[in-house]
Image (cartoon, rainbow, N blue to C red):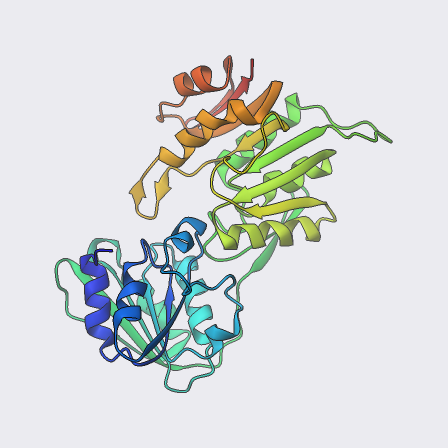
Length: 342
């Protein structure tokens, strides 16, 4: 495991690694491994993304951010997320420690940092300082934990869909209805069957792939679909669970990567509003991998619905991997497609 410039600066600014160390959202596991290798260190780590969690050194990972090990941390190391809501999530998690000597040390690339990140830290810590820049990276260090009531997850009622939506701070668009999802749901409303009253089988088996706050999954469940929702993010999975419960809907929620876990020919419907960023970097690879595997998971005649930024070249891949593909809706920014598995 190779330390990048951000991780090296975090470790240098953190200094003494003896004691109870908690590493948050380590990418690739190198930062956690460095603490494991330090003398007299006791490290545990938690990652929101299941792919990052799988890369952690054996025995260091926590299965939940509510694990008691979080409350005993004396030093918390993390990478700064680009989203302020995600940073608030991390601050809440770090500030859950009962240690009076708690230090929170988080680093990032200078080009992705902003002064508003300092403002977020000051809501949770009395003392906040920035390191000198090095290799185009910088670290923020916070101490003096404040007694602050957690503000995430938060709920919001969406009148357009008559849904109450819950979300953690790091979830895409938090508890708001983004334009892509709005266009997708409107297209689904006009095209998808609703289970008839008293139907024992419902409308069929559906998957909301990359469920976020659970808007689409809960909407599908309300229309009679036997719905599963999946996401790589713990925060998204927990948000979807809260959203489904708030609207009295039954949704099976799982934290999984892609479609590899799903059985062959097990679904009539897959719906997705996939990300095309991985952190600050553009990356369509996970979406393209899911599209490539969708034909295996769908039953013959099953449908794959996708909304994406119109500039992305997904149409040919959808047609080749899933089946005949049509554009159902399009506006200035987004395209909704329907692919029917052969």
